[in-house]
Length: 303
Image (cartoon, rainbow, N blue to C red; front, side):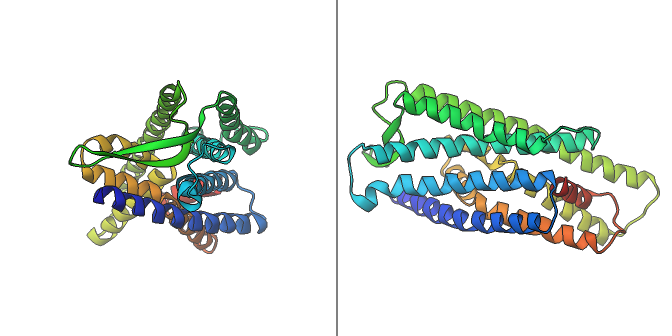
């Protein structure tokens, strides 16, 4: 049970940090919007960050509810926390998919498309679908006390209660499979979007190379590093670390990697937010930038 205890501590600490950093990120986005910058991507980033905040906060409350109050009853509070946790998870996945969709419009359509009230329509989809799904599950009695089972090396089991989908609900596994399927579709779609970003960066590099520009090894190494940071940042924004859930069935290392990266996703979103904010300010003071992954970063942030 030592490994279970360690993973629990990592999850709680990571989720608590994510709550703090997502809150700070939302404040930064609000300050940017108040300065008169009404870019569509900022609104999308803000709502994704808000969904992540709800997810980590509701997870902490759902996990700690029985420990704080020593309440073993499957009451209405636990059912409500389970509903909020499921709703926030679906909302996070929905906004991750919408981030990928917005990135698709930027890279493929390249500003040649106009959608009236674009952010409003995305908001209705990003918040409306999870709300309808959670309400339907709530009416069906899905939520309640869930006994999370752990198994140690001696083939003995122990349970940890939390507020989620009730263990006593007859069709709980069906709802769980549907939720996991939605997660897999989002990760698959956003993985394709990340591959498209890599392809675009490679195309930009190849085009500049054919133009006769020569760079030193130091400059080339710097560009490669910036490209890697760009791709890594976009992968976290698109929620691709969720795909590591498949490694949890393979090795203990995969379990730790999945737990650390996903419980601290709020921290990575905050770092991405700060990096793009600084990049946007620096580009406002200089107009002599080559079209590269730096421009792609600012484009995904400013449009």
